[in-house]
Amino acid sequence: MTLHAMARHAAVHFGSPPQDEVHTWETTPVLFHGFEGIDSTRGSYVRSPEFECLGHRWCLKIYPGGDRETQEGMTSLFLENCSAESIEIESGFSAVDSKGLQVVNNIFVKTQFDPMNSGSVARGVQKFSKRSVIEGALINGSLLIEVRMRRTDPSPVDLPITSEGTFCRTMLKLFGNEESADVAFEVEDAGQEVDNKRKRARTTHTKLHAHRLILKQCAPDLDALCGSADGMVSVPIADVKPDIFRHMLFYVYGGRVTTDDLKLHAKELIEAADKYGVVNLKLEAEAWYVKTTEFTFDNVIELLHYADTKNCALLKEAAMDFMVDNQAEVLQKVQLKDAPEGLLAELFAALARRRADNGDGADLTRMRISDLRKKLLEKGLVVMVQGKR
Image 1 (cartoon, helix red, strand yellow):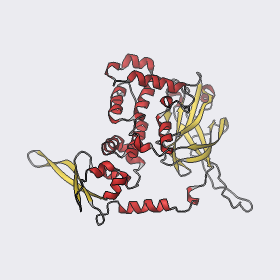
Image 2 (cartoon, rainbow, N blue to C red):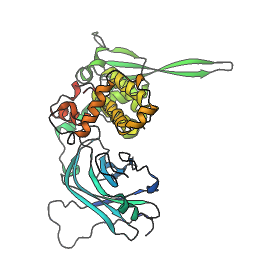
Image 3 (cartoon, rainbow, N blue to C red):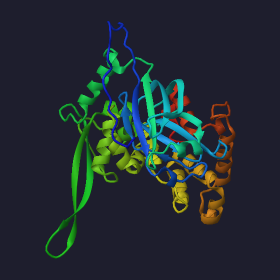
Image 4 (cartoon, one colour):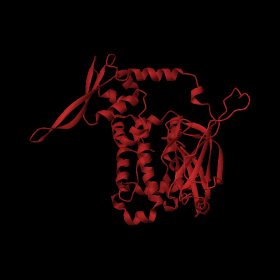
């Protein structure tokens, strides 16, 4: 068997299908090339590129030497939801050898995957297989994992149009509507103009229209900038780029920032949303910043300071997890004297999380930030936490 693309065909039906929809399994092959060269230190992992299945974005997270809770010689495997919507599915993994045989097979019962920036985004198995078995199944040095999924919840396309969806569409129609707006944000864009002898600064402004009523309800900090004057109000914005401010304002109106923009502008969105109080956007951008940031011995202290300054609890938790995972090397390579105040307490919290049963206990100090945010979201309180534990 070679690593050619696998053909997938539509289902063949005999007889009349039932009236209720039959959710069929969908299979995605995921290849980890050069598997034996991937770091197999326990606790180290790599993520596959994102792929699409069942209308959602996913990635596969593999620990070649097992996560920190497994014994030596095991491989751990987890499926992550990379979409902003939750989904309930059945799923499973298989390691396939050069003959097309499933040398390792795992299927688990239906599971709820939360949106990527809150709650339980990953599900899988800590003891997927012994590493020796995995290595014996490599195809020209590549590990082939087949990921199987099928829906257990009703497909979104079957749901009727709701009044909530109608309201969201109406809100989005108002975005940038100059005729009905009573606020104009003048967003400064400082560039450079070149003449024959020297460079000189050139400042332009982008005008973005908004509505006081919407700002008052959805972004009070932005509304506060508008003062109390009647009629059209002009508000200068000099500390955020126009495209970032546009993303933030679009989000306030119920729009979504695309995954590509969240990846590309995560830090800028965190800073803008933090300054102007658009908390949910800040949490979403923070989740992507954590997901796309490589933690190293050189930058972990800087990231801790940034997390401390911006109240980014998820980022701080990820930095602390990195330090706990690499304790011996951190002591040798990281200047701990430069760390923010409270480092010791955060370290103990990170160690306590490792001993907790999946962070689901009643002790809030040991729960993961994503689980805390999920509970707050369920109670309608997430907008009040400002990114803190």
